[in-house]
Image 1 (cartoon, rainbow, N blue to C red):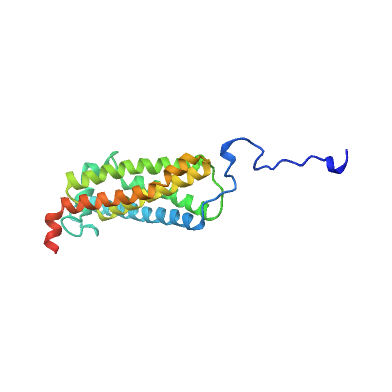
Image 2 (image 1 turned 60 degrees about the vertical axis):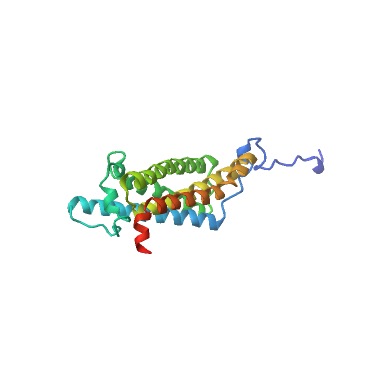
Length: 213
């Protein structure tokens, strides 16, 4: 056998026919990774602050939380309800655990550490479950509790963004064209979501907002 007949070793990136290997060399951009990290940090700060405020209220029933601003924007009115302890303990404890994971993901992504498709898919599923909780708390806050928690509203704001980002990254890594096309519509859907929530809040609490004009 001559040198020209020597077989060329296969490219390790394409040796497998597995579709999951199509995007093995792709990583989220630095801006996207930084946004994920910042979302995790903001969410953790909001959840930790709510937890501290709740403990202060347990120690002193007369304690006024820093986020109790007026009759509508009142964390204190929200934190004492059953909805604020859906699983028998304060909901922010879930946020502390969840957003801590998001921070780790953001740090790894920003450091250029490759993570498999299933990992980002898990973050997408977790964010989707978070959105279910957000939707429940939004409707409960507006129509049952009749008060809004500013720190909770921070979570309402960042969780949808995290869902969109993680879903788009998962779709890109999977190499599924249909999934990528679907996730392109998530940004417009996000705008619709924010618009609907703002309109619901404005309409339901107009009796108070109108007094401020």
